[in-house]
Image 1 (cartoon, rainbow, N blue to C red):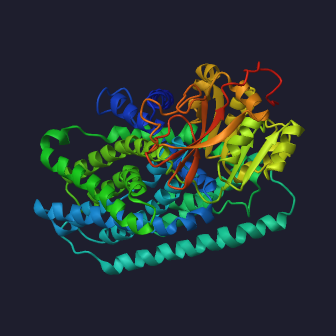
Image 2: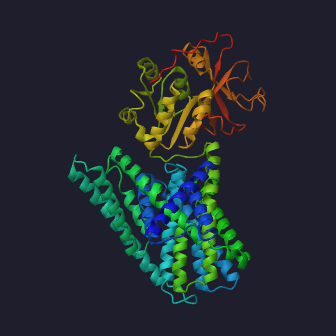
Length: 609
C-alpha cells in the first residue's frame, strides 16, 4: 500500500517535470509525459512502474478528459464540421488500411492478420488528439472540429471491423460481415439512445428546474455520473468508453447550462482530468515501449511506420481536397490524425489475446502507435504555426465577434481597418466610446476586469479579443481572463519595453503580443489630432524591397514614419503582429505620421482603466 502511494507521487512528479520541459521547448505537455514514462519507466531506467491504482486513475482521468472536451466543444459547430470531417475520416482510414493490408500480404501474413494491421493503421487516437488540442488551445478552431469529427468517424469504423474480427478463432479465420453488421446496429442504437437522453431528457430536466441552480459541487458530480453512464452504454454497444464520455459532454450545452455555469464546470473538469488524473495514463503509456523490436524486426518496423504515416497524412490530405478548405489545412489535419495512441494499443492487446496477431506484430504495432503519437505534437504544432503565419487558421463559426478593450484614437483606427462588422469596444472613457459610436462600432462602458462587463460586451461570442489599453498590466490581466473565459485567440498590444518584461506571463497562456513602438503615446496623440493618416501600401510597388519594407514605426519607405496595423492577404484582413509572413501580393495598411508635426509628450492622451 505504501509503495503504491509512493509510485503515484513519483508518476505525477514525472508527468509534471516532463510536461514542463515539453512546454518550455514549445510543445504540448502530453509529449513530455509520454517521454517521461519511456525514460523513467521500464523501457530505460526502470524507476517507475505501473500498478492497479495508476491504471484505474489513468482510465478514469481519460474518461473525464473526454467529458471535458465534449462540454467545451459546441455540438452545432461539430455538425457544421461533419462534412470535412467525413472526408478526413475516409481518406485517413481507407488509404492507410489498404496500404497496411498490402504490406502484410507482401511479407506473407494471414488474411485476418493483414486486415487487423491495416485497420490498426487506420486508427486515429481521439484521446491523444483531444489532449493535444487542449494543450495547443485549438478547441475553437475548424481544425479541432474536423480532427475530432474525423477521429470519431474513423474510430467507429475501426471498432465495428475489430468487433467482427473478434468473432474469429485465430489468425487463419475469415472475416465476419454478419458480426460487423450486428456491431454497426448496436452503434446506431447507442447514438439514438444518446440523442434521446442528451437532446430530449436533459433539456426537459433543465426546463423543469426553472431558475433553480444546483450547487457547484453537486453539478460537477451529476455531470461526471452522466459521463460514466454514457461510457457504460457505449461499452454495451461494443464501442469504446471514451466515445460515450465524449458524447455525454457534447449534450451539456447552452440548452442545459448557462454560460457561466458551463465555464465553471469546464474549469473544474479540466483541473481534475488534465491537471491530475490523465497524466497517469499518458506516463504509463510510455511503459509499454519495447526496444527489442528495433533489432529483431528492423526492416518491417520501419516499413510499418512509414506506410502508416504516409498513408494517414497523404490519404487525409487528398480526400480533404473535396471539402474545399485547401490542401494546406488537409496536410495539417492529416498530421494531427497520424497518432494512434491508447486505442490501438488496447485493440492490439485484445487481438493478441484472441490469437488474431502474432507477438512480433503486436510489439511492432505498440511501437508504431507510440512513435506516430509522439510525432503528432511536433507536426501539429509546426503545422498550426504555419497556418497561423499565413492567416489560414480558421476559427469555429460559433464565435464570430471581435472584442476590443480600449477605444483611443489609435485603437479606433486599427479596428476600423479590420474589416469586420461585428466589433465591440469596451472602455471606461465615455468620450472615446462616443467617437467609436460615430464610426458605427458597438460600445460598452465598463471595466474590462469585471467579468459582468465582459459578458455584456459579448465575450462569449468573441473569437478574438484585442487588449489595447494604455495600462500594460491591465492588458495582461484582461488577456489572461479572456483565456479563462474560453476565447480562442487573444492579442495584447504592448510597447517594446513592456513586452520585454511581460512576455513570459503571456507565452504560457499562448497569448500573442503585438509589439508597439515605445512612442505609442505620440501616435495616439497624432491620430487624435488628425496628424496621422491611414495609408494602404502595395508591397509589389517599386518603392519597396527587402530593405525598405516598413515593418516598424521607424521605417521611412515613403518619407514618413509608418506604423503597420493590418495585413490584407487574399481578400482577408488580419492584425499585423510582426510575425506574419508577408506575400508579394499582400497589402499593408499603416498609419503614416506627418514628420513635420512636433512630437507631443506622452501623458493624458491614452484611455485606461
